[in-house]
Length: 175
Ligand code: SF4
Ligand code: SF4
Ligand code: SF4
Image 1 (spheres, rainbow, N blue to C red):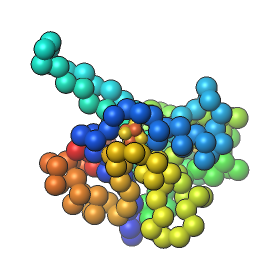
Image 2 (tube, protein in one colour):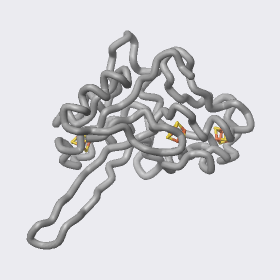
Image 3 (tube, rainbow, N blue to C red):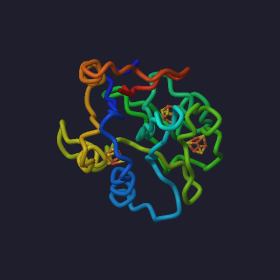
Image 4 (cartoon, rainbow, N blue to C red):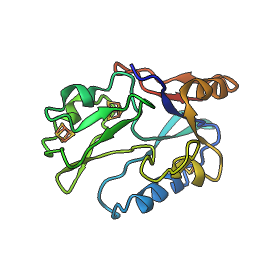
């Protein structure tokens, strides 16, 4: 288990599905339109007219406590960092075999130029401790938060939010 775990808190009550988080992610990571998307906004509709509901949830890799992608990767290209719990891909080691797709219950791993491609919480862009991923900075509605998972839990609790469930134990709170 990592000594520290960073994670996201996604406040669906604030999300307006503007896609700014998705676009800024593509721009900062030099990902061409029409290829992979490291972040996506899911939409859930409920109820019946006139009492309908809509909920938008912006999700990327969950940097799971027990990452299935790490467990199945035959080369060690994907690993969980001891110092902050982030799950990262070493593209120099990745052979593009796509085995990691079978280990992730959330369909996160995508493939670009024969290499696995997923969110690293902007690890390579953040220069100082406390810097935030670009999606969090860009969101105009403060729907995305990032930091120590315990702190995310405290923030989420103010809105009755909960830790996401899943066999791999995602590091994401959702309200
Ligand atoms: S595609 Fe890359 S990261 Fe995924 S299982 Fe194969 S070697 Fe590992
Ligand atoms: S969400 Fe999927 S790709 Fe991300 S750490 Fe968990 S198992 Fe791996
Ligand atoms: S930028 Fe914020 S409001 Fe817009 S889709 Fe992403 S999470 Fe939702």
